[in-house]
Image (cartoon, rainbow over all chains, first blue to last red; front, top):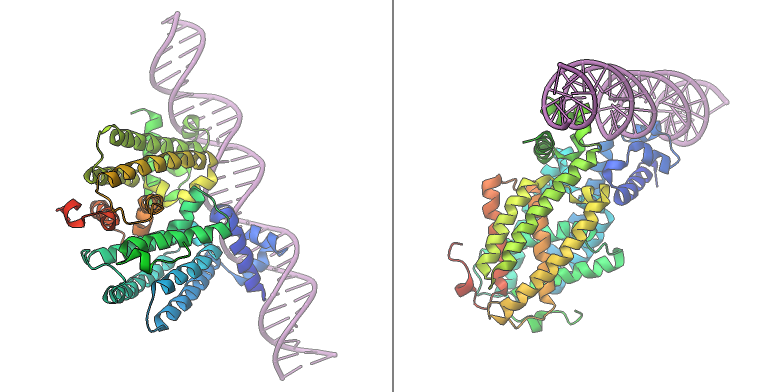
Amino acid sequence: MDTKDRILEAALELYNTQGIRTITTRHIAAHLNMSPGNLHYHFKHTDDIIRALYARLAGAFDLELIQLQQSATVTMNAILDLSARSFQLVYRYRFIFLHFVEIVWRIPGIGKDYQVLTRRRTREFTRIFQRLIENGIFRTDLPPSIWPALVKQLFIVADFWLSNNELTDRLNEKKAVAAYQKTFYMMFLPFLAEPEKNGRASF
Amino acid sequence: MDTKDRILEAALELYNTQGIRTITTRHIAAHLNMSPGNLHYHFKHTDDIIRALYARLAGAFDLELIQLQQSATVTMNAILDLSARSFQLVYRYRFIFLHFVEIVWRIPGIGKDYQVLTRRRTREFTRIFQRLIENGIFRTDLPPSIWPALVKQLFIVADFWLSNNELTDRLNEKKAVAAYQKTFYMMFLPFLAEPEKNGRASF
DNA sequence: GAAAAATTAGTACATTTGTTCTAAAATAAT
DNA sequence: ATTATTTTAGAACAAATGTACTAATTTTTC
């Protein structure tokens, strides 16, 4: 692991546990027994570190979505599995989600990128839901405008479930994964044509 | 309006528009043509300002909830109206919701208070939903564990809808109110026993 | 093995920030 | 009216922060 990677890993850990307000480049450098000068040789500006971490998160997310899209038929189980795997990413890069608005205000490029990403993901999920309706998995008695609304709900919960956990239950990683998955399952349940049949036995 | 109020109003405006990271007591004082010394005479510590603003928000919220609880029968319309009025509060004190985790980490007292508040509100809503089930407004074919899950979903969306708006659509206040209300309406729709009958014509 | 390039440590600097201190001015109390 | 109290302005301070600079050291290239 080269120096740049070590800096990013240390920054990630410190940001995750102490927030972006209190952690400075000096803290990150000290945590690595490295001089501040050296750190700034690798990352000229503090924001470059955050930018790099966001880029890693976005890249990892893209990989997950590509995998989902490549499967011929999308099942509910595939979607729930995606939610579990993407939570691992959310948790790994949790400081971004816990301070999302702050980061986007501070580094506009990230906001722009997230907007584009979100629009693309919205289209993708709308299409997936379309297919789930056609396959009789989702209900057909609801107004069509419910589906984009569901997508929005899912995005909000996906992005901010962890913030809510931080404000309320403060579950540790293991318990958080389980609770997060259950939340997602429960979000889909009332939309299923036959809840008892299409639901997962494991819950 | 006394000086303390003027400081709080100025702080609220600046925090709302520029975030808590960039705004310092000096900015707030300058915005009021006031000396930093004077500001710190009224609020010894910066955090005291945030604490005072949070207290105002919490107090205003309590008033809303008391009003809902006093009504003999809670209807869907009453809940949707509450959601609209509470959004006005979320918007007025939006810096708190846009930087919630940061604030709670910085001022633990606020986190403690929010936890207690949330638990109480969870119990209240669970009871309300119970009655909506008994009155045949909500479906009865879903597992009972869906209702606490719905409460959690609602809280997450209520607290972070605005953050999501900031990251994606950036709607102004007027449009945001409308979209927020619609989101809430759509969240209840799949839980209604007879969507077409209990739903609102206005959507 | 010498020259060039890279990495690193350490220091330095200007700015900002939260807060305190002092004294002046305004206001209220008697 | 004079005294006491509250409020205000302005300066001052220590700590922290982002980043630049310099020189040393390590690594790579030839």
